[in-house]
Image (tube, helix red, strand yellow):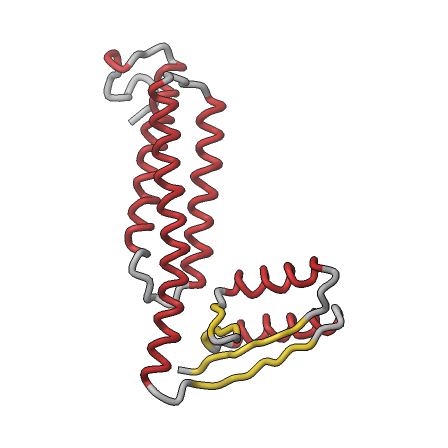
Length: 189
């Protein structure tokens, strides 16, 4: 497999430049391996890193961008494993945030806080979680073991949100849980 190896140095000040470069590299999904930032070779990654080379120059820094490949399978496997671990760490964080989402929904139900503002708030949080999943999947090379679990958790978030939104709707229509029809007379299915 072909890889891109990227290294750079920037002046200590302004720290804003170092943070900017680091964020751009991380958003691409690069891992730091043996003092190099590493990405699978793709035209998109090359283009993004070339832009970063220009930005680093503008910040009075230096950088090097190298295309290459590991010379033996063991090294290739180590790099691939580092990518998997990095993505699994991201998926793990997302899974933890899904668990927080479940707790928030349960808390609102327990408080019987069936107001539209809570529906909106939780819908926004759900959208953030779904967008985060898309970002991680874009960086994932298909090796992360937690991907399937993360997808399942997002689906569960959607289901729990839908149930909560339905409860809020029914309460707004003056119907308690025991009074719910099949939905034909109130627009809910």
